[in-house]
Image (cartoon, rainbow, N blue to C red; front, side, top):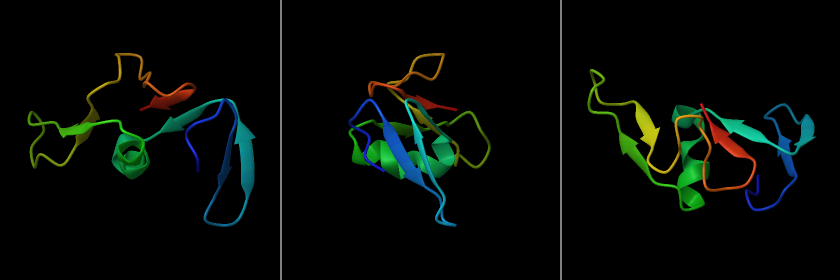
Length: 72
């Protein structure tokens, strides 16, 4: 997936392709995509085990600095 355009094409593991103007990523599953595109992630130290990540540059609505890319 390329996170730099206004329209995104995603191909699932089963080979099904989808095109959308918006992408919502689960932070703990899609964090590598965000990190590869310059969005910093931190570890939530308030969660036992400290394995839950959070997006440092997303607002309370999950909006990132990439157009049309949201995190949940």
